[in-house]
Amino acid sequence: MLEPAIVNGKPVRSSFLHPFKHSIGKEEIDEVVDTLKSDWITTGPKTFKFEEIFFEYVNSKYAIAVNSCTAALHLAVVALGIGNGDEVITTPYTFAATAEVVINSNAKPVFVDVEKDTYNIDPAKIEEKITDKTKAIIVVHYAGHACEMDKIMEIAEKYDLYVIEDAAHAIGSKYKDQKIGSIGDATCFSFYATKNITTAEGGMITTNRGDLADKMRILSLHGISKDAWKRYSSEGSWYYEIAYSGYKYNMSDLQASIGIHQMKKLDQMQKRREEIADMYNKSFGQIPQITIPTVKSYATHAWHLYPIQVNSDLLSINRNEFIEALKAENIGTSVHFIPLHLHPYYKEKYGFKGDDFPNAESLYKNEISLPIYPNMEDKDVEDVISAVKKIIDYYEV
Ligand SMILES: *Cc1c(COP(=O)(O)O)cnc(C)c1O
Image (cartoon, rainbow, N blue to C red):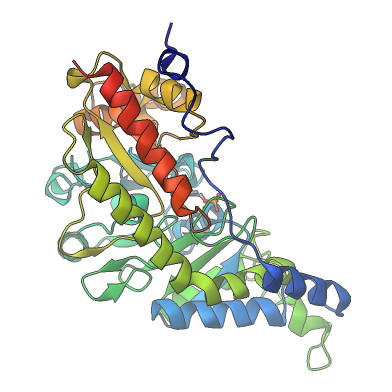
């Protein structure tokens, strides 16, 4: 049995350090209360204000606020006309949402293995998976590290494919000098509780294409060609038309109230994430038992996650036992991700065997996401560092 805390005396921390925590302050709370006391609580002026702040921040022409990143991804797939019999190239190293929106549109996700250092889709392996059914590539900027977009856009252009970016981790992230949000046809962000900014639940799609923006906005609210706010306000009328069979994906002003203030704090919060990543990098950089995240010269990392690789050859414990040992030290962690092709649904539907994407499998086997969020105190970060070092000292071989 594994009992590092007991064997070595008392745990590094006396109270549990959560793996994620949001940063909501008085400004967000006051704005939500203001909205609740106003005449309009669902999609309206605050949602449009949030959208405007957002597209200005990422330097895109349009932004459409929705109720999740999953909804954003689904709208992008549908609006681009991807459906029956089509194939979409993506990464297995992601969350369920990235591929399920393809499957739920009657198209097929075609996985391409990831790069061993960035965990991102390997551009060099994309072309061999392209067929005459391929319509799009969905990239995932894992942990907040941008994919190699020049190479991906070049392939997309050559084969006439759409590019959708799953930027659930990547607000504030840059590819070269460009913020993530305006490179592909559509970019999808998440404001889920654990993400770099949150509205509890929420998402945003950004695009530079006016036609796509219009279609996604209409699809986000039942395919109705005028939104409710305009319909019921003094300038609107009772008349509306259904242009498509749509969805109910709109964001409410209550959520946007939180988002507006999260955006104001974003740069500050990113700075704190960077400081924490620096502390980890300095402390872990020379320890052979773990590998710290790689940051390529083309990437400005958003540090949504701080993923380490445990080199279990140099330890008498494996990754799972390392996680248990950290828990015994009162440090909460997580694993990102269990590759999609290893899940029962994908194995049964597509016949994956478990040795299909070696880089994804090996990264998954050894990955631990250490806590990284803006309201961690220096002491919290130091506790994580002490706990990791204590465990390595005890179990090194
Ligand atoms: C969180 C996440 C999503 C889904 O975001 P929601 O807003 O919860 O729908 C999609 N892709 C990735 C990579 C994620 O981490």
